[in-house]
Image (cartoon, rainbow, N blue to C red; front, side, top):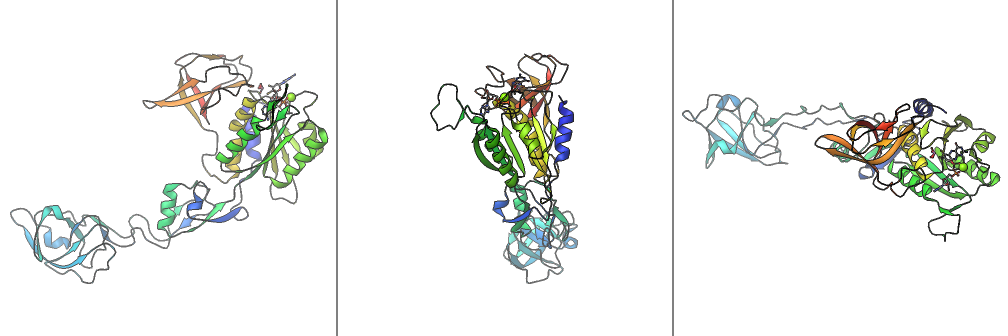
Length: 413
Ligand SMILES: Nc1nc2c(c(=O)[nH]1)N[C@H]1C(S)=C(S)[C@@H](COP(=O)(O)OP(=O)(O)OC[C@H]3O[C@@H](n4cnc5c(N)ncnc54)[C@H](O)[C@@H]3O)O[C@H]1N2
Ligand code: MOO
Ligand SMILES: [Mg+2]
């Protein structure tokens, strides 16, 4: 059995992120939400695009009003009104001002804006009662970003804030990485679909649906290949078909030592390089990981044989597969598993032999994370208490007990 750290290293090293040329597609602005940017975004524009006013008030020449105060007010002639979107027509000379509104272009000659609250207006004249700071309330051209500067780096996930930047840069055709295709299959003679009647001895294939849902949430495209019976030929055909069409293949079940656990043999017979056969993790011990190197394809296809027990398959997905999908997707930072320290609200035990994962809920309380263990049985065959799980508390090898109030590492899922 490999320690978790070693298994993680093997798996993550086997993932070669998408190539920004080969694995790129162009999508419309809003369609880019949730996708990973494949190319640096620059703009030909300065931000702000031109000097403009940050207030409703008057555009003036600083030198005209530098000495102003309540005893020595300065009266300026208003020669133009400039609202947002208008191009100023006149240049401000000594003793002159322009009426201006927030976002409107500064006129030539003016360098400072006085907010209207500290002025008095009489017809075409405005009296300034306070001296401003030089260049007050002017948003200067190019002070946020200059033309040609990188606005967004490749490898970032696109959300509302990035969409705002892309829209402002008038970038409406967005280069993003394609989504990884992840084939998913379940193996087991006992399995039926959620729609089929359940006969004695049978069980609903929940893993396929759970995994497809998590794959989608991770930004990849799930390809559900259905339930494959415990039959060498049928399983071999299904796996070889999956390897044709996907970047990653996930199966659940059939990786332990039983007489009907065929996955490892089939992977070898198909030419797969099995790199992991078991990991010192609980649940999830019989995890299998293999690489298929196809000379006709630019990178290897990765195969994850997850254990069949529902929690074992999800824990190994969260711990190993999800970060691998994120890394493959082109995410440059933060694709790794995310752990936080949390104060445990419950006590729990392990035999200390394998790195053990306990499922439950992570809450932020007064700035500190708290972990609550899911009630009911922490048994790898029990998925009933998995709902609302957003954290897995980790007990390292050699540690056997967490007490109430102890700090534990929790994997965010
Ligand atoms: N003699 C030993 N037996 C087992 C060992 C061992 O070390 N020695 N390891 C145990 C551990 S740990 C696990 S985990 C399981 C893994 O078993 P497999 O990956 O071979 O999976 P199956 O035998 O096919 O099924 C296990 C269990 O999970 C249920 N299952 C399977 N597929 C699904 C599905 N798609 N949806 C829901 N439930 C599923 C299946 O009915 C079984 O109950 O092996 C232990 N045995
Ligand atoms: O360790 Mo196995 O993964 O559940 O029960
Ligand atoms: Mg088995």
